[in-house]
Amino acid sequence: MSTKIFVNLPVADLPKSIAFFTELGYSFNTQFADETATCMVVSEAINVMLLTREKFREFSPKEICDTTTCNEVLLCLTCESRARVDELVARAVANGATTHEEPTDYGFMYSNSFMDLDGHAWNLMYMEPGAESCG
Image (cartoon, rainbow, N blue to C red; front, side, top):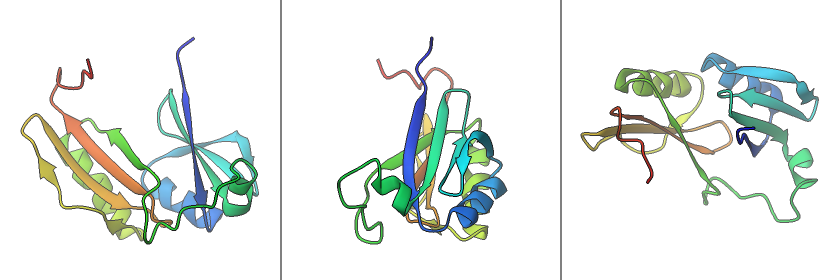
């Protein structure tokens, strides 16, 4: 069995977050959804659980990070092209996100990023074929 990841993120307004990520083209697995949570399908191996802040608190005894002053995580996803990276960032910004950093071109890798409606940082990148090996 291959490893899957379920990233858990607290959100202030679950319906608004669902609408936002739907506009970016993501789908949702209703098997893991109710009025407090939903499962956004990023790929066969990657899922993002969007949880109301109250639901998130059930899983963590620590305070939820204030994303206006701190980053709790930088989510990084690959895209199939540089154009797709910029397209998704533009769609995110058009639907209420803010830009996170200026686009960066490393030659073999290109990235652009946004902060979603709850201030979570999403970095989208394209890597030239063969460059994605982490060792």
